[in-house]
Length: 384
Image (cartoon, rainbow, N blue to C red; front, top):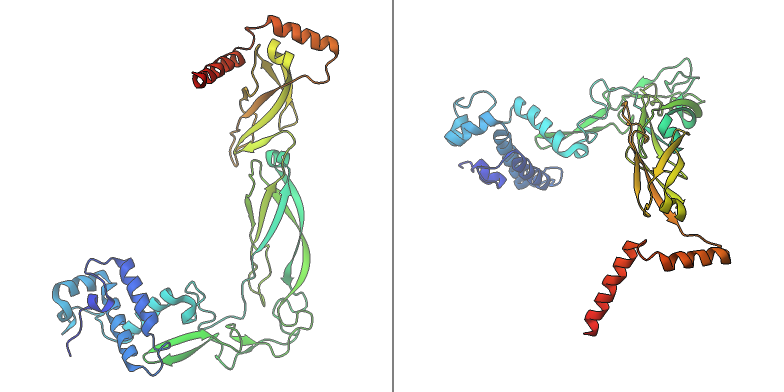
């Protein structure tokens, strides 16, 4: 029986790119894989057909030869070595394809890493840890060195992390012969999974350490020093390599990730490297002008000149008085926004003075006068 066109087999057009080919093959492989269709010879045949088509079309040279000569490209050695047969080269290539496509379905770790494999080791890397740390805005400005206490798993001192009772050693797993994985065949394809006896380690412990129960690590609280650089922002992550959980049975330790949260400040709000501060001033200071002193993030004072007739909401910029930029010599700016405060608790004399000022100062409030002039015109338009 004549072979079907490879593009027709995968259900794609001749202009399909690598992504479309891979997606089409993934769909067919999941549908017709022998493990999903036991005792179904037709499904196995479709699976082989799709595998052969993808094996050719995913390789640029093979695809070019196929596009030019069709199936004849691989007859009589015309297509060169590596034609679409089911020899050793094909099995090796398909193993790579399916490990990439199916990850855990094929017994891999989701990233192509097999649990044990030939020469599997009993050591396993420890888990990464997260530590949430809150600091003040002034600490973020200046940087600091802090001590933290972290509950974690550390290597067992009794067995030196091996998990075996002192004087004994782990033995080779009899189920997988130390490979850490077992294989089963389904049709022409071989599936590899982690050994159920040793969980992919390749060794078993018959006489475990009594201190760590064979894990090679115990729970303990450690004190660590953390250097926080100047300019860190809320949510900054600091990585301490090899300070996470100790590995199982002598494996490498994981990492510790410190996530920083910055407390709200009583004077300053932060936006990147810039700081903003709202400063109330009296009505007379706003009207007559003058100077005020405001705090800066480094604990010092800065003088700000208030011009006559300053309105509420006016901003003043203090260049370079903001936060440092992380790992840089640059600094942001500080912005002062004034808020004009209305007098309260006035005496009768003060009220009389203000009334006298109001009656004489018709040109002192141009914004309010202009607003109400426009408002009267607006109301009049409805009346007409």
